[in-house]
Amino acid sequence: MGRARGWIRSEARTSIGARRAELGQIARYLLVGLGALVMLFPFGWAVITSVTPGDAVLAVPPDFTPEGASLDAYGKLLETLPFWRIVLNSAWIGAASTVLQLITSAMAAYAFARLPFPGRGALFAVYLATLMMPLPVLVVPLFIEMRTFGLVDTYFALLAPTIASAFGVFLLRQAINQVPREFDEAAVLDGAGHFRIFMYVVLPLIRPALATFAIFGFMASWNSYLWPLIIIKSPEFMTLPLGLATLHGQFTTQWDVVMAGSVISVVPILILYVFAQKHVIASVAQSGLK
Image (cartoon, rainbow, N blue to C red):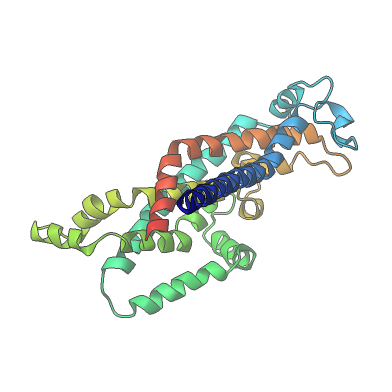
């Protein structure tokens, strides 16, 4: 009889533990779902505003199912701005900036991670310290430098400040440090030098970090506003954030047109993330395991 009661109590504790685990799992799903809704709400609100006609976008309380919804704002956007020229400018500046940052950051990260030279630690600390300098502090000397070389209002002026990235060097150096040095030693035994080790051993093993940094670099260039605002004067060099800023009037703003441009501007970032998502998740998982 006593053994039966013990078995019943044990089964009851097991059942209560399973129930608590199930409730905990449901609570985690609800929390993740709530977080996803909070993160997606601004984009959803931008889409709704872009199809809301006229002054209905300013209605209080906001109408999430507007009457007479249409895509007229997208047509007005294409009529108001040389939109595809602006998008092309942002796309190629973002792509060129990303490729150059990947090259310079990967090479610098390899040097800091693998090449022994005097003052390496101090130089790396100084390099990282530049991360604490905000762009508004740098724009004046950068502008004077560009004006001295006659590069104001050119594509090169848009691109030049983004060729190197201290954040990229830090991120890729951390990834290279996780590559076992035994791989380097094996390559050296096969007669490889630093260039071949960098190209054929290190780079393939840090592809997740490269993909993650590529997304960050492209997003930073795509959304850049302050530097293009200062260095660009001609409409033919205008980038997307500058183009959207011109839609704001002095007294009134067509918010549906502004939101239509904002929605379109998000699409390339989403496409890039979808293609690189596997590598980004791998990079995060790898960082968590170390």
